[in-house]
Length: 169
View 1 (tube, one colour):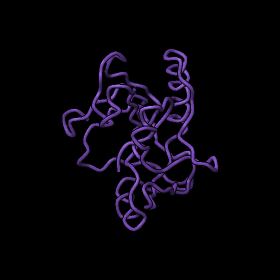
View 2 (tube, helix red, strand yellow; view 1 turned 90 degrees about the vertical axis):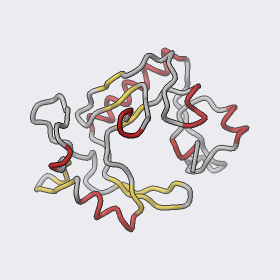
View 3 (cartoon, helix red, strand yellow; view 1 turned 120 degrees about the vertical axis):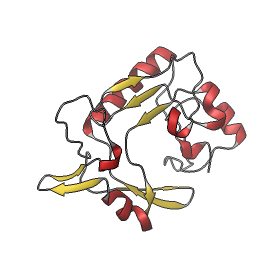
View 4 (cartoon, helix red, strand yellow; view 1 turned 180 degrees about the horizontal axis):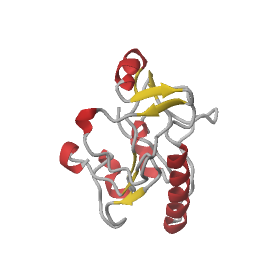
């Protein structure tokens, strides 16, 4: 992230569930624009979400399928993966691609691995306990998770989990 994109985060979760801490929590990382100074950055290894119209082409270069469903493959140009669990095959938690909305557009991606979900849950519990936070996300009047940017006032008052879609378009 630092070398290729000028970004930094406190934690990275690899496809096999390995958690890497890259900075002390007292340090500011550069991952979420105006939220940097008051947030803990967590990056989850995944090729990402793409507009539905282009998802198949992009995701097809990173995923193949067999009798057990889709699994991640690294393109030859990627080089060493760094995955610590020898022989690990990264399979999405569910076989169907996940679709969701952000800023009025529909995106699609393969789900995270079960190992990533387990690691994220453990990390979230540890951080909420250590920092005295609640595991809550921004919700609209109907109780659904919001997929839009918080207003400046909402952002300043917010304490809990937020995603990039809550900070910037």
